[in-house]
Image (cartoon, rainbow over all chains, first blue to last red; front, side):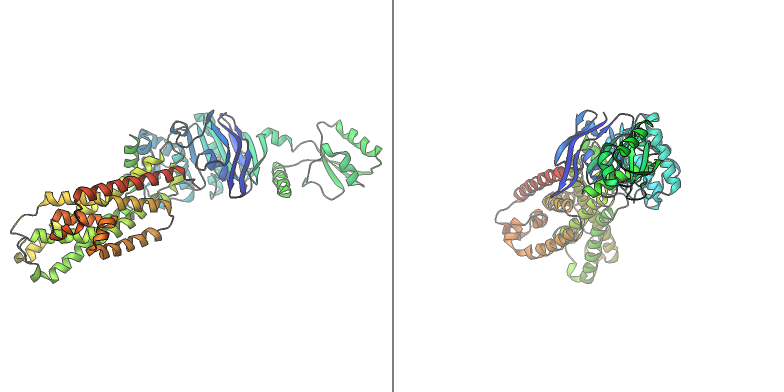
Length: 305
Length: 259
């Protein structure tokens, strides 16, 4: 595993920003770390980078426990946390030179990453003159200059225009194949992450609510059936294991949405309802969007909190 | 090796910064000020040893009056280079030791201070020869300036300032705003003026050590005022204080969470 966390917890006073987080990020994957604003994404990323000390739990990177000052481990990690850290008074090239000097990297790396993020033409301009998108690309270049094996990005498309978002998406998608880099990226936009991620983690109020492949998340959108009945409370008790909590597709209080493993379960459920003298007004197959699933996870968690 | 790389990288970030400009401008300000004073009271300034009179006065103004304030502002600006770039979160996620970053900042602050001293000396020499052309009676052409002595003075007086450099760095690394270091700089200038004739402050205020060193090197009669505190004692206290403050700063810096 490239990243593993064990019961990772970070408290600010009595507030738990991150609570008992158990992340698993496979090598070569693009892990989309999703959650609404304030869910604990940035705190998690700072914990993964050793910028914050955890209150409890631990972070393992490449099978080694993360400790501050472990330079050998951090040489495999590149990062971009929120806005890029750039010296605005220096040129793009000079910003990269600072890092190549610091890490004693060959100067050739500068040209390589400038080409990679398509900033070679503007490399000698001061960063204060760059657009937001150019700054973001330079931030990525800085994250990649020491050829890391893991790239950790916090909201990398923040502030980018649609074209910039698209280019960034294509670029990130190519990284595992071209360079064998594992990408961990956070976002509050599912639509953005679902287009590039192979794995998804959903966090809200510091708790990990879902973790798995994108396919596993997508599977949750299928095989949903809405039953409209006369006694929803009784039906709810009867169908508890199959129920999808708070589905957006439910039109009214009399409609319950259940998840079935196959079509054969539909007549079985119908029979059970009828045997309990529950009148069925309608049985309608439903399709959820991934966005609905994300909303369900985060919305349910809101209610619990 | 890490410290050398970090030092080189820190120097690269200095380019086009206010920290660099201040280190150049502050001694030039002293020179302009002193030149004005010198020209206004030129009759009284005619001396047998014009160069010593001119250079000693400039050094006393610099190390006694402006250096504590200039250093406070310069170090705050130096630390602000990374803070403004939100650089800590990037830097500390790289394979770089925080200790080397802290020490590099200290050394760069020291070099900036030395550079200011060197600019003061070079500027003083240029202005001294210009004054000689303006008024040959001032006596600048009667002898040569003792450049080696004044170079040594810059080095020793800067080393005597190490302690306050370490204090300012520790403070600037801890506080996010510019106001506190600036206030301390102003307060320390006032303290230096008050301490000009105060035995106790001369001995126990690190802000006075550069001026003390200047006086000891000048072999001024009032040097004996320091109750026997000689050059090695001031030097030793300054270095010991620098080491203590730097260790404290490094420990805090290494423990700090980056939000």
